[in-house]
Length: 191
Ligand SMILES: [Fe+2]
Ligand SMILES: [Fe+2]
Image (cartoon, rainbow, N blue to C red; front, side):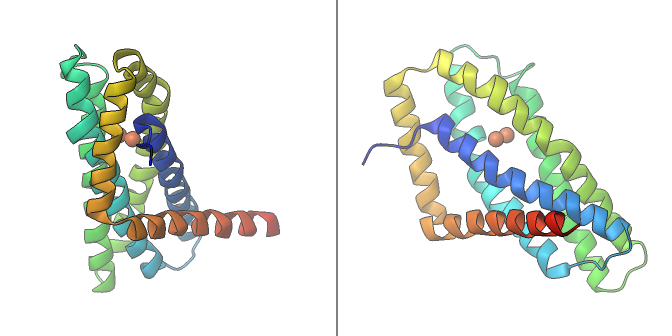
């Protein structure tokens, strides 16, 4: 079987992450409009962001793609890599903040719902721009500095990351993202 093309694989993962970020946006609107905090949905979003977006996707970018770019003269400091890395750190902080706020909400702590909202808003503000920078700047740059054989090797390394998480688990996260999109689209059609 041919190795996955690394930037195409990352772009495909972006499409799933975007669906979950959109769900965060809709959730902010709903809670802000007086709707209940759907704890199970938010728990699943936290898990998706931790495993699919961070461990799998950011993991491939930081541990495998960025070092290949550094070897080919892309500077590790400054634009664009240090900005992207800082955004990954910020994303982790927001997801941890949301998990903590959710825990406090479960415990009935006053102000916890507002903290959930604040972290959700942070996620919706961060990710669309981060993904845009990667789709339109990072990946085209990658294709300029890496050739066919290098890309194939990187694709094989990405497949090992996927295997370490499990193909079934990854498909489950992608289905979760698709399900959220279908849910919000059906709701939008009704309104
Ligand atoms: Fe990234
Ligand atoms: Fe990315």
